[in-house]
Length: 159
Image (cartoon, rainbow, N blue to C red):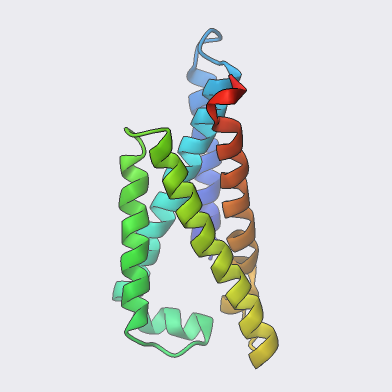
C-alpha cells in the first residue's frame, strides 16, 4: 500500500511542478482545475491501475495473502479491469471532456463499491485484516470522491 501512497504524492508533486512552470497568463482557474484532474487521472487512477494489474496477474498469491482472501480466477479478471482503466487514463492525456467524465464515473462506481464491500466483509465476516480495511479502505473513499469533486469543477459552466 505504501507504493500507492508514494504514487499519489508523486502525482501531487508533478501537478505543482507543472503549475509552477505555467506562465501567469496560462494559470487560469479553469487550467488549474484541468491540470489537477489530469494528474489525478494519470497518477491516482492510471499508474496505480497498471501496478494493480501487474500485482493481480503476476503476484496473485502475495495479493491473496495480503488481503487474506483466497486466490481465485477472478483476481485475473480484476487485473484486466485495472489494465483497462490504466490504458484509459493514459489516453486521457490526449482526450478530454466527456472521455474524462466517463472514466471518473466508471472508476468512482467501481472503487466506492469496493469500499462498501470491504466494510461489509469486515463486519459480516469479522475480516479486519489490513489488506481489507486498512489504508485501502480510506483511499477507496477519498480518491473517487476527489475525482468526482474535481470533475464537477472541471465542467464548462465554471469558466
